[in-house]
Length: 257
Image 1 (cartoon, one colour):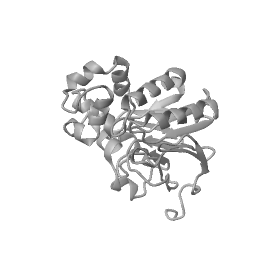
Image 2: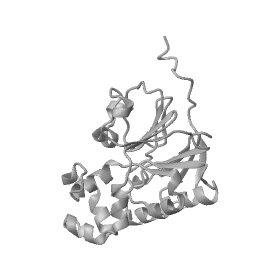
Image 3: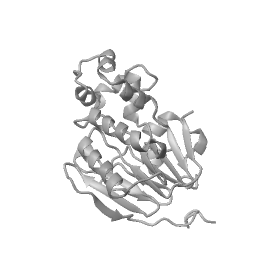
Image 4: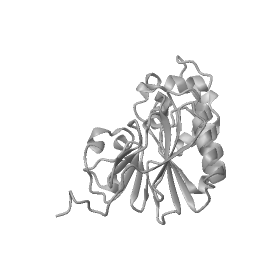
């Protein structure tokens, strides 16, 4: 059963950041914005939705930025595991799944960022990777529960109990979750499946992967103020938007008897 982390008391502000995929420059600008402009503090909580590595140009730089952020704000941050981190661990023989597909599924870009050739072996990457980077990958959380919100990389199985979700769904599920309603009485914030803009199907779900590595944008939301913060690929400006759709009371009219 996947690890579930739970925050009993909702923080003053609850931020969530979508898929990064090796795009370190945009991540650094967003994190600087959270620190300098939003002035995050112990009253807040920041959730990273997973898929920090692969496909983009600087997976190593992304992990360095995340570790520096964790060093300063670790007590009020959660780093979720994505399918790419799980594949990496599988390829390294450290407990993940689908490792056989890792290098061909964007992992070669991660290897390159650590100075390892595509033809390199797991031991080559282990020798090249700083110990604190490996420890970071091994410490990632399965999913997070915070009052009326659940955060998971890919989503949840709508037919499985909220507290009995399995790794394969948390890291890989798509249509079975996205195209269906669920009865968790919570909004699921997820990544993994890229959308042109932040995806809203309230009160059920919010999709945060806006395809940064494909030239679109990195997205961050703050659920209490219902605000989206985005930076475009190769850009240096943070744009602010309100949520596109408001949620309602639970249950919504379509489920009410």
